[in-house]
Each structure stands twice: as C-alpha cells, then as structure tokens.
View 1 (cartoon, rainbow, N blue to C red):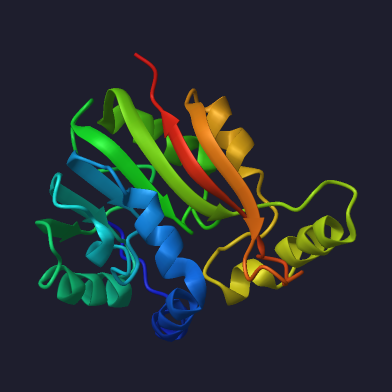
View 2 (view 1 turned 135 degrees about the vertical axis):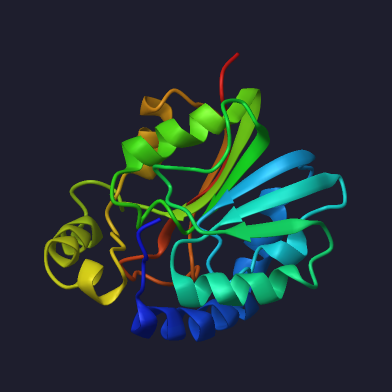
Length: 212
C-alpha cells in the first residue's frame, strides 16, 4: 500500500476532532451507527472517534485508514472499543475484503477527501452484501446559486484542499451516492454548527442501501 502521510493535518485533526465531538458531532456519530449489526467496514476511520459508539450487535469492524499517524491513533482507540475492531491500512478505492463481505459500511467526514468519489462508492458497493447499508455523515455543497456555494467553489479551486489534506467543501455527495447505485432511505440536512455559515457547515446524515 502506498504510504499516505499528512503529518501537520493529522496533528491538527486529532485536536479538532475532539473539539468537534464535544460541540456536537459525537451525537451525530452515535446516531449514525445506531442499530447496526454484523460485520461493518468503516472507511476513513481517522483517529477512531467513531469506535466508542458501535452497538454490541456489531460483531466486527474493519476500520480502514491510510494516514499513518491517524491510523496509529485509531489502533490505540480500538484497544478500548466496545466491539472487536481491526485497523488496517487501505484506500477507499481499493478496500480490503471480498465481494459482499460486509453487512454495512460507515463513512463520516470522509467522502469530502477521497480523490474520486465514484471509485470509492463503487468499491463500497462491491464489498457490501445485497441489501447492505451505507451510513453517511458528510459535509456537502451549499445550495446552488448561493453566496456560500460560490465561496466553496473558490476555496476548492485554491487553498482548501492543500490545507486540509485533499478535503473539498463543495461536493454534491448525496448525488454521488445515488449515482453509484445506492438507494437513499433516510437523509437529514443541517448546518454544523447550527448557526454557522462556514464553507464546511452544510451537512447530510443518513443511510442508503445497496440494492439486491
């Protein structure tokens, strides 16, 4: 596996993710995985902030994280998780596992960063069983023609991806999920923080299924 290393971003993210969870993302993470069962693949596990929220009905989590510092932090978090978690090196467009191997996939603040959403979502569908779930929590593009959407496009074309390890603020991730063949069953749109008009504040949270 080609090594992925963003040491400055990883250090910042480790602190930022803790602050974000305290500000409310912990509740979104908990809701995201509520009711899951069986084998789960978490794509872009970061430093493992999701791990403590998995319910006991989950029999195993394979947590994929390519960035080496964040992967090491995730390994430490896995040691105290309430369910068995194996942290592995890997990329979203080349996931470990055979076809139909997992009952569910989890992405949280990840699809903004993958180099190619279509490839990542195709791989996610490949490793899911028919009827398997994709649980997603992502920041997304603002409403088209809005001032914020224009700001997102400008930032994505200039400094934002370089500052935040490839992150893009203006992706229409919900459309990408449906284009990949998933059927969106539930979705909630909101701003986080609720009063923010920042470039990464528009969010979607929900679940989709991989059709039989």
